Image 1 (tube, helix red, strand yellow):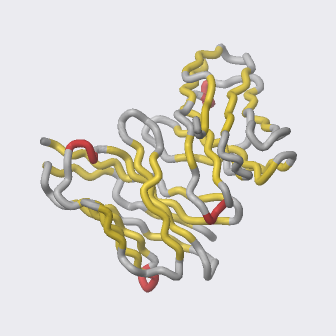
Image 2 (tube, rainbow over the protein chains, first blue to last red; image 1 turned 30 degrees about the vertical axis):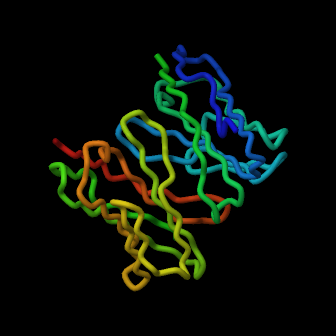
Length: 113
Length: 112
């Protein structure tokens, strides 16, 4: 099992550009999550999904969009990138939501210049 | 409201010292789960332990131990005889509907 994979590992964007961060898990987990971690800070929940076709906002959803068309994939879309979106983005998945531990991907380091 | 407080922002110790990382939580739920994660300098997040609210027994795993006390709403993490490899940011988390609430983390630096 590869677990949770994220692509790309690193990316530099110019202000106003858009991009999609990919996240795939092969553990057949229903729940998936996107977090951002700013330098020296904790994790902030952006969006999450409790199953294919269902998504919900987290603490900091502005400037982002998500979709969940399959159990395995949970892409995060950044529209009109801004310097405030410079961060490390982590995708995670779990079997049963709040009852189980989350498994994290390796992260995507995004810089917006 | 669900809340996790890790009041210690940063702790520095010398190798072989024991160190305790504090975690205090607030919850409206009678059944809940608590978690600890480690984030080493390489950046990945590593799951360490899960504890449910009905199990107040302390847990020990090698040099790591966890003390869960419902009376004080705390779930503290102790590293015995710390090593340089324990240097990391440690996060405590609390279950919430469909997700986890993370604390702000404690950065532990272990010096040789």
